[in-house]
Length: 243
Image (tube, rainbow, N blue to C red; front, side, top):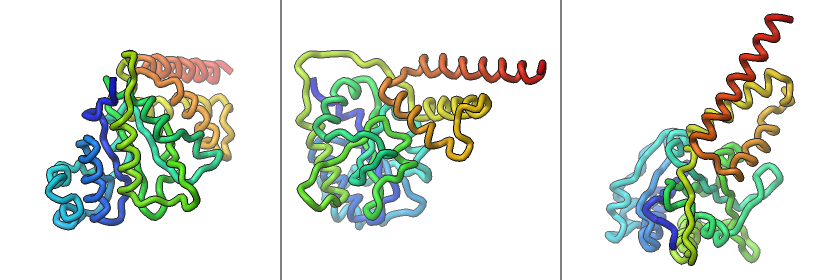
């Protein structure tokens, strides 16, 4: 069994250059990835993109999905993989492209997957990585920075060659939008009960996000957790009224 590349979308968050978008499209087509999404508040010249995409991937440029906000771009995906060159304790444990590809063999069979790349000059921010279930770092000898299209090509190549002999089944997972709603509700309840540090609640929520990312929640499980949060909030409100 191989990665279901028809369920893979490359998401470019705030790219700076039209030529790089075209080069990404060409690299993706070479490795069998056909979907491209661009998050930007400005248009890019189609001809400049197609010049780098060449006739091989011109149709990918024509079919790019554009979004103004990253939240909107990722809302329908069930697994998000973020790419980063910069590492640190708040950016999460990172895996290699090969490890990522092995993980996605099963997940991609029944779930839409986003491969998230940041801007050429700064990559993904800590806030961007909050949306990610997996964080990938491409090992290099010395100089860590890679051209955007080169990074995309490396990731897509690993997906192209990844396979697993024994078939398995991964059910449909919760979407990013469903998970974000759950995280917001958990944060609100934990603030009400005084569990989160009010000076930096997002720092503590980051650890909770990472935990749920490892669990890979299904949509029905998210509904259960949100139901528990609603009941806890109601119970706390009743306690305050009776105090």
